[in-house]
Image 1: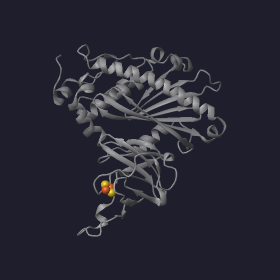
Image 2: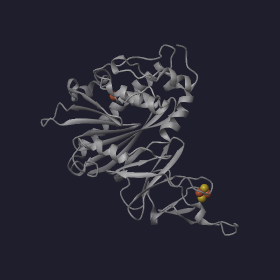
Image 3: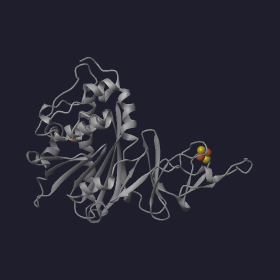
Image 4: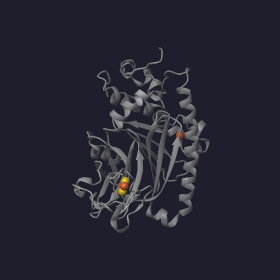
Length: 366
Ligand code: FES
Ligand SMILES: [Fe+2]
């Protein structure tokens, strides 16, 4: 079929629910078209909870983390009551940033980096230099704008619109395979960001299957028991897991993908979180945060260095294949493909979920 130029036509052509063995992958227009990207911002990224970080990344009163999420500059700070507050990183004077990088607010105030207005950690405007001649100006009208956020099991989620999902229940389902207090026992180590030259869903699809591991990740392939690689899917997340070949205690590597764009990569002693943030139809940012058990920090610093080095190697392999795949999807040669029933159930589940969010199709059954 010819290229589809409208969102409604794409929805009507590509929402039929078929079982995995008969299903087709998402048509290429879902990855390449600006009209899809605009609709994703409305249907997904402005109405769902999205993961920010574990609260340990903001460890003490006054510490903060900043990021650009689509067109939203964000600052998350720990307030004087030890609670996490998330604001737009946007000064109410003329839109300047409160911070460019993660840090700690000295004397517990956030200061705009443009003309120096200061805000308390509760978001209220405090200091306004050289403003005494301004008529009818009330500081109460110019506090920071808060973004709805929730902390569940140490995980900080935020929502740029009206959240409708029950995120605590979703998190509790994820938690079932993990030890009690799993997340709260991890300590933040560092962050690495990657720009990937591919649509964000190419990165998600790639994460959601182990089919590519033997060819794309030859070293990783020797460390995982690929033949025992398992996939479980739910309406909210996909779990892939595999025994670690070097582990004498049959330990597992667990890979959670929580819709729409959050990943938890769990190895003994280590949690790595990834967030995919779309930038445009053809580019996304992926943020890797590293957390470790306290004893790994103390006893195994070289293990941490090697863990981050090896993750970087695997990520570069993924970024290279994602870029090439996106070029393939953008070419005249590709419209839609098929799934391996044995290994691509996770991709299928994500794409079914995605179609339902985007088109709200009554044809889809989940
Ligand atoms: S923009 Fe913030 S003080 Fe001017
Ligand atoms: Fe990969």
